[in-house]
Length: 190
Image (cartoon, rainbow, N blue to C red; front, side):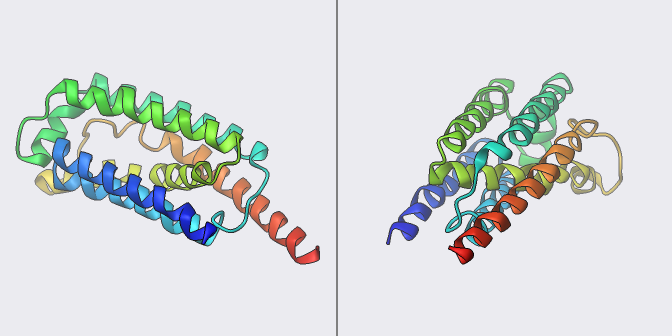
């Protein structure tokens, strides 16, 4: 039962985040958020849900990824990402709504995730998985957006830096998997 209880909060977060994304940004961004947070849940279930590991090894790649994500969101701000989001949503997305999500809510969540990860709380492990899936898979949507808009490849807001968090997130995933294998090996030996 305790293991199942650790899935309730991630599922509620997924519902809340996807709903918020849909209301503010429309269908396409809501799909991207579903991939990030839903994919994070799948990764969490197959890795850290029942295997706790030493998070001190993964916190540095996690925080570096957060920093690179903030660089990326700054590019989105500078290049008026709300205009791209408006085109995809089929309605005007105010800059204030975009800033609420990318400049306040997202950093708040990811830094909060770091605190929970350091404390080795179950929800922190989920945040780790969701963030790494978001950075390694969902951020790649920036390279798909031009095709969604007009079927051609061209620059759209956020494309220059969307790949930056990939490097540290993939390294973080590597470290996480190494620590999980070590924790599972210790559990089997004990």
